Length: 244
Length: 244
Image (cartoon, rainbow over all chains, first blue to last red; front, side):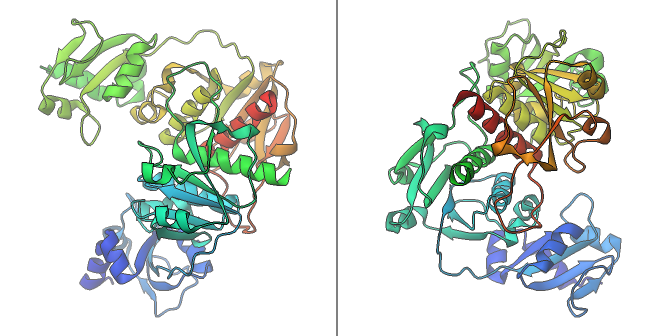
């Protein structure tokens, strides 16, 4: 059974301030829960209609599908809903290619970018304080478990970039140098900007190298690339240059 | 004013069978409508709360915001909703790199892929008959006007690939050859498969070159890349090889 106070807790976690206060976030669905259980993230409690998870009996609450649907945020609840503890971030140490996000607002984009960091072996993801919270359930869902394998840090991005001396700060701009013919050092921070406005002025003045993904069509009115697809292209080209 | 029969028509276009029967699709929002008006797509009718569009007075229906909200499918209606005629597809002639989609189901993915084709100068997009309809309003929204600049054809994909002799059929598979060290001819059909199941068996047996986007992390359990980000990486690398 799910108690009233448990329902209240789970519902409250839809809001970032409650997630921060309680230090908890929600993961839904068999695959997602299994992936986070296998990671070093710590389980708080698990609500499931099927006793199939590798979790301690003390933390597992067997509930009916009706109850599960009541606490789920998905259209159709999927076997389980788990609360995990938000890991306490350690000192930020960056090495190699690092991604920095300046005001990303769309949860799907952030989730996709986390998944790309995981794929391309980017260990640290830096997020400006106005970037969407990575423990937002839509981000967790879109990241497909990658959230447990990438160190995500919310920081004063301008301050961090100013203090950092080890990495070249690279940003994408229309007037930037052609990506494919650019050279990059092993240590670089690749900065990606907000969906509508791009990189903010405060960050732009800290960018040391401006690059551009060339357009290959004749149409002049094509919208700029979506930030997640731009990240995919940049990471692919960075890793290719490093390894081939 | 919007008449009852107009509301009925607009609502009916949420379903593919009605779009096909009427030969019409819906575009919402200022930017989207302007882009399609500038293309060679033909306007059927425009409903707007602000008389700011370059459309004939006969086709323009000035309505209140309350009425606009009634016919809109967006959470908040955006200035206008237009019906355009679905273009009649001409004979399929492919040249250079062509993308073929085998059972893509997510409207956001299809919209993003159309936008990528536009960016990377891919003129023709082939879709299997079970791929989501490109005139679905979510696809139109995600494609950001690119839908007017890419020839999109729904076809019996296996039949088409069997008949085609001019292009190398390339598909992505885990066991494929490393993308970055592969060579490709100028004329290639790049096949991308369904989000959950990848390329179907009927199409796989027609693939002439299997390639793979290498993973750069140590984690073995990273989910495969999302199909839209995979398309971005592939098109970027194809164009780089061609032009640099």
